[in-house]
Image (cartoon, rainbow, N blue to C red):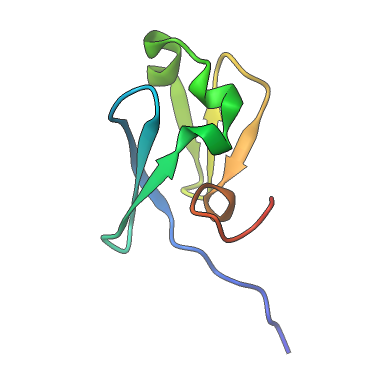
Length: 80
């Protein structure tokens, strides 16, 4: 029996200010992500925050940091 969780995909990301990121999902939900939980993202400049890519709708990567974040991690459902 396969018990793996299937997370919705990331449709887009929006930064409201230096403390909050919205993660818009393909199931029409939006999660408010407090950036204090992701200090590497929080410390990015405004320009660096714009330089990201969504990988296969399941991961988020920023060009200026060496981290890849899963949708589950961003919405608080998993550690990876």
